[in-house]
Image (tube, rainbow, N blue to C red):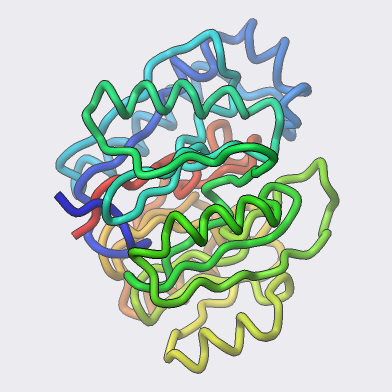
Length: 290
């Protein structure tokens, strides 16, 4: 089986985590939301409803959905299943989050993958830290890694080594300080690939060379306005080329996508996305895309 080396090909298998397992209950959220730097305390029951609606969209397009189990080893951020691993054509690379509170997720994820008999091709070691949100496949032979507060130079060195058999071009993008170390700025905070030649971006945060590189490669840029950047308009999950899902309430971004020929699904994400600043790409770890 060939695993994932795309952000936009047809999604066949994905890993998610239900808020019933990640958030546990309202009492747990009340105790933990400030520790994990959420904007507000999520409402547990509403989060469960939002997630069910999100999964209903996925089920229309994705044949195989795996659910991470509950674990006392991890916190409420484990809802965002994308970050502890990144898939290559041969299997998963186990990462180690730049957010220390999330580092225990890697071991739990590794055990889960082994139980599912999903191959593991590598694992970050030593001082290396990286989040899945800092790693994108621009196409099936080009990988882009963001160097920021969540992904360091040692991780980039190790990732380059581990992905060498699958990659012709390994591009490093220096991320801005933006709102600081405590906030979560990933590479995927300002770019989502929706097709080979279509990307949703927030250009203000993009290094000039990277933006120019996309344009030179014929990628049409959907520009997310400032207000919609803050409501996760830039966080768009491709279910297949030009078929995507995003948090509702981002009218300009949605219209630009529709004008570019995309089909756009929306879900109410106030509790599971906005408050934890984790949109649909964060909620999902694509395992297989065809």
